[in-house]
Length: 159
Image (cartoon, rainbow, N blue to C red; front, side, top):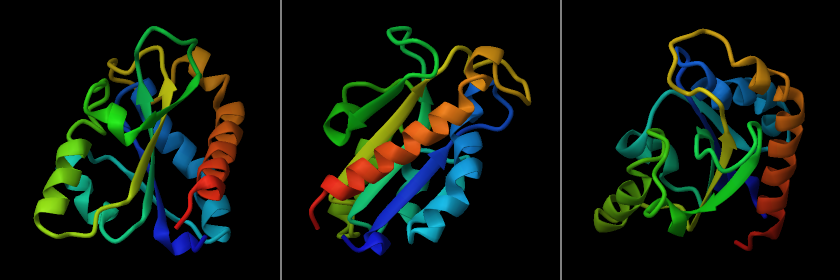
């Protein structure tokens, strides 16, 4: 599969405790993924603001935090595009479904596939410049799990 047809977006908010996990993982993985030919963006944006980043890619992989209370902190949950309309628990990918619909309406080349790699977090709301201790202890393992999941997604997708 041509990797220039894949974009990986790491999303987060640098002033909110665990909501920054996407940014942290993006900084850990950016060089490694780019050396393999992936387009990588580390962003503090959401919804319609992501259209410019999604345009002309066949596959978009979004890495972001999630707080459901259903999984242990540090769990990696794969959400497909069809689930985004039903489950909106992060401001970063809220509006993604609407952004894709708008892209289609305006004949802007939207991704054929969108995958959200959501990391279950403990505290995405407190203003802080560091991760919660529980999540911080899992960053190295999470980075490897996210990398492996990106490889799995892109190796199983057919362009």
